[in-house]
Image 1 (tube, rainbow, N blue to C red):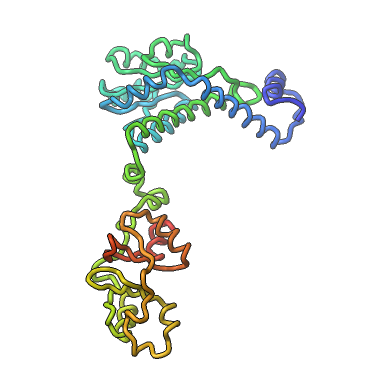
Image 2: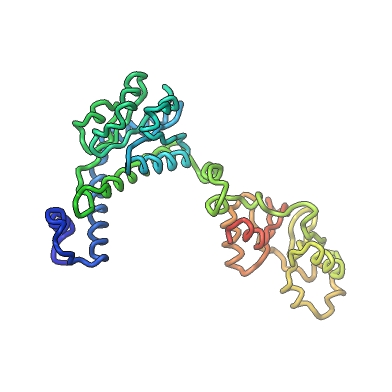
Length: 335
């Protein structure tokens, strides 16, 4: 390329009707370079009020209300959703609807984040006035420190004055990317300071693949009478009946409650000669693979894949408490 992204950006902005000479891939690279440069600048020039905003939101008794108009409204919805799913109660409120009754959703226990690149979005005026009237903490996300929104706010999260990535310099592109990233930074800082862990995340994401990946083995394991349990002196004839009846293709050899071995189809094949004349303890593989009940399903899957097994015994300090099968992981959406 014969010039850096900002130079090409300004050339296109100055003459958007000029013949198209760049390929789509070149345009994409310029857009990404402009936005990534702006993100680096945001990291280097992180708003001075960032720490104060995090401190204020950590102490909040109510919710974080996030709002903006147009593209900023879409970003507000995403930021509110990210906050809510990572331990900070949040809700997006449309500024137009707020002016027609939805201001009642905002209480004195809440804090409000208003997003406006210019800081002069007319539709935010009623929300600004409402926050001022009822002394509700107002956090501004805007590019202009001298704007109406910034002057009214208790805290200012100022975005760097970076060019939009579109050729005419008007469509919200870089500005929305910066705002989205700043929202992510807030959410992550809050969740870290709250001690929001994987268990907390799982509670908010019970459905879909995310929820399945965060489930514990104990949530889906078979237990009690469903387990194919035999003792070391159980004749193999009876052991085969147990294996067939339980349907897992394995049998757990248990003595005094402790798992001492496991019998698989492979063990049966290796001991075909005189099999029915032997006991379970003689045929079983000793010290079998097992997993703890509080392990993640993804850990169980990794163990099964690593050792090419279809069932895994679940033990708690050596005592058999359950069994998890590859089919259970498939049903849970992990495998």
